[in-house]
Image (cartoon, rainbow over all chains, first blue to last red; front, side, top):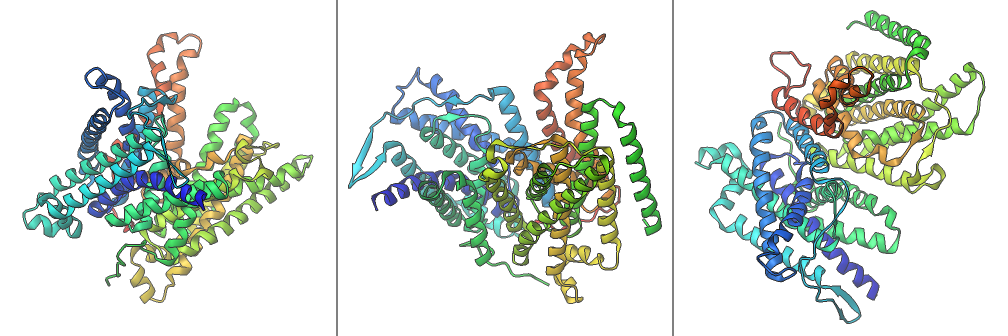
Length: 301
Length: 329
């Protein structure tokens, strides 16, 4: 039983990271109805931004420390938000009125560009991510071993989800986002600057991906330019699982994928864990074709 | 393209393939390999075009079907050891067919969820199937698992590549142009209207997946006996994407365009590699600046992809004034 809860804790930490990435997918999908395949690579860029900022920052701030880690997190989120804005402006906006498939292929092109450009510029060999947080060590609670890093991941993710919820539900920009997601043309007619809203959504999603990248690197401190592919794919699965376009759905999907994966790796076989995420997805989609929390779209004749 | 015309093309290409194969011995192995890859890409892209372009079912798992065909045919030819060109040829044909049928069964399995899913959901499920096939292969010790599988016989030559590419084009184009095949396009254009006219979308979607997967399986067999080494990771998500890009750049549902895109996109990375290698030829040592292409050719490939999509979003080879908007995704 202890082992089960142990796996559950590990899964929760992994699932939180996936949930953060999945939120970016689902937000962009909700507004543009298009899968931003380059999102997983922003996750990678986030981790690399942290990698390069940390030594530079260490001169001004004591590292490892909580405040230093927060600053690294903020800087890397800001960096990825800017990259996300640039990608949206130059790669996706000119294609806004084309079939969505065109944007999808462009997104794949951007993703390949970031991966190969990263390998060329940053080097293909894995790098060791610096220590950002002081090692408080491990706690034993009723037989459960909990790593301080895992607690930080879960805590930061929860805070970010709450912040995102606040932005989407309680701010002017959030209302505009929901309006554009509901009907872009009508929103534009009501005076919503759709371009600004879409750019903001990209920036927000990219910042979340960057945060996920840094959190991932804190937990698994080996980073390389291709590290975003698999988490990106799984986060995408998570977004679809929860019902793509639905924010709580993405968070739920991320947790389900993370927990299932650690359970399978722990109890069955770690070599099958990559397939299990997809198997779960297929089974759930066969029962609920628009995801767990997704709205069923009716066909209009 | 009327049917007599098409048959002439079919026979002509096969004859050309046989001739090319006869003279192919004079070609260096590397260009030969590239030309074979072009044939394989055409089979893959044209069969994917049936699913994505003509039927409008967005599939991201075509490499999975290719993997099934590659492994099944490789296991068969590794098991038997025929001598003599005729017997070996028959054995290869049988192995290819077996691979194709195995892939078609996989296509049937993937086709079934399409009854309930559409658009992005279908895309992610086909992607998932492709990944599941890859992971299963990785865990199968009988075919080498993650270590990979050596294929003993290098049966693939120019004749097989050309002939199979010609047959694929002929069958897919003939199928879509036929009275029966109009249903694929009807399902793509408007599923509800199609079913109101008495066309069963389910049947057409599953047929598209089965036929597409069959040819992908054949292409996998060709690939296996051309590279003579298979690893599950060679059939990942990125491989599927490569073929999707060919279909979209060629213009969805435009067979000639897809063939051209398959040729172009197979040559492009190789061409960049060759351009980078030029300096190693005797006498042209002055071309040293091209050396940077070795490291940056994949970056150039991705940049070209973005630029092509931005400048010709309707596909590279679509010249109709009002390009049809595929109602996918």
